[in-house]
Image (cartoon, rainbow, N blue to C red; front, top):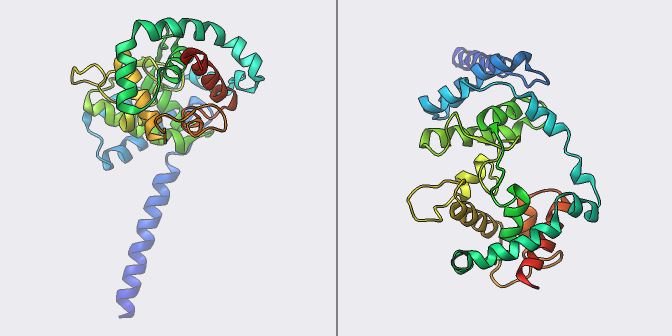
Length: 270
């Protein structure tokens, strides 16, 4: 009995040593020097979690993105006052243009409200704030951006989840190694991170494919995201009202949340 217990204890010690050694083989980093070694270790973990050959190949082709790190460290606009933020991000222009977009796409927004309970205003506000209505969706290699942030020591846990989601999307053919988007790995007309695509991405134009570069898919997915974050049909979405919490789920910055609510109200004529 003692021998069996000792044998089990020794076996557990070996396993723990192996796990510890594996974890130490892939530490986070604050520069590019350890990125290649980290990728090799992460690829083994990803394979163990069921990521297929396409996803692994896409991971191994990523590069450390200095531009992504620079952007991650330089997000100063969220520290502005609400008035300053609205002016910097063109809030009045987004509201004015948004009313035209609502009229021009009336059938689409009516169908989205019927399906998800979300009116046009906040959807158009997000669309305008994120990409100026699809006019600029970013040109950063998406997988390199997400992999860099998963490796970086600032928020590795959060972006590790995003990277696993991105690799699953590669395996499914939703993303490719050539996909480009914003500096933190957001893609499409309303800038979805990979995990949000997995959870909330829907086919809005009925062609059988989820493509966030498509206006209909992006807006439908955004409505689905808000519904998934507790949107209540017919309730208000200004601060203190029931649906403001769903808007808070979209972006953690208070000025951004308030801007969406204000612009959305102006578009909806409230």
